Image 1 (cartoon, rainbow, N blue to C red):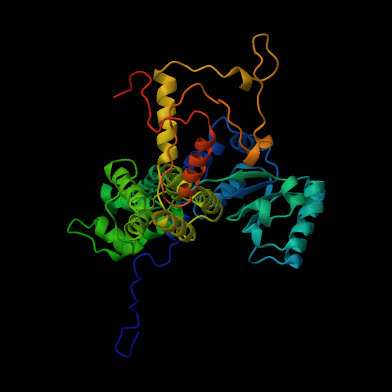
Image 2 (cartoon, rainbow, N blue to C red; image 1 turned 45 degrees about the horizontal axis):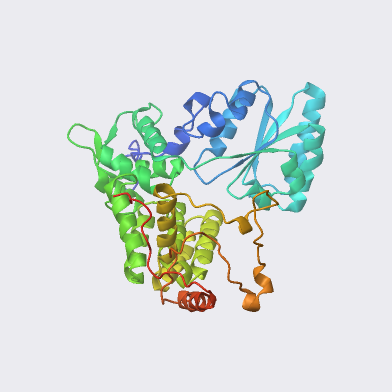
Length: 451
């Protein structure tokens, strides 16, 4: 309004003003509308059967943001015949909790009806707040549904955990996210067919939202509200508008086709080729495109044995530690651990001698004559074991004795002169010099090899 405005004139509301966010409007109202989490919500699963039978007990829903924890709690609230209360670990202190709990206890005495108390972000409760809940849960005055993004075994008291069933929710798959977005485009309470998005746009949004349905719906809403409609009055969204709405560029990367395999191949070959700069670039591309960091960590563990081996035995230890760290901390911090492991392995001395050794031995076992175990190495007494006795290696000088361990002089493991393996090579040369019959330095063929 200004001095020249007519009093009856009212400012026009902006698009989207006065309405709940799209993610809130599209929140499922029943189990049939839930997308994903089939491992706990399929027809034959315990949680679904308990919800449908209204026999729910105290539970803790544990999973990443946007996977449906709060939605599932509200579905339970609409399904059950019990009284429903909700609070948050951010807002409720001990005083507020006691009021809710005492009111629930009084309601049960007066009405004979249990209360379900939903506590969002329950991990934010300190020990005292969690302890307040215990007697009411123990007496059956309330049933707790806790939602947390943190591991309940670390952030929730053991007594409360022991009185609850813990269900872990997973990030939604890309297929599930696309299903959520498609439903939002068409639903009357959503975008009501006034917005369309091409398949490439939806696929990109599903790939960058990291399994978070709320994030994908928020990005879709921003794109819809900030894109002018076409001549037909419909807003048409392409990958460009979606990239702008999430502020993340799409990279040419698929998760189960050529680009996926080509990139991981380039990554492994860069580490094997001792080029840490190239390796880090391919690592960054995979992480940016939403590749599962556990997949990368698994490949690093394989590489640590296949391409580095005993040239640096610390490589496999670091790779295993990296896998455990990635599993525990998740993204985005896991990128740091993956980068450390990648650069260390890329700069480590290389040897594939152990890899070649086991392949050669497997080839002989598969295609050659199976060699018998020497009698002096066999376990326990046997009628035909003979007079030759096993010699205890630690009783010999330098913890070494000259005896036959396999009836062949073929060499399988040939250490290189790289890193620690050079020490192993010299040690083997010394042992061979102490043997009466020095093994051949060349591998022999035992039968045909596969092509």
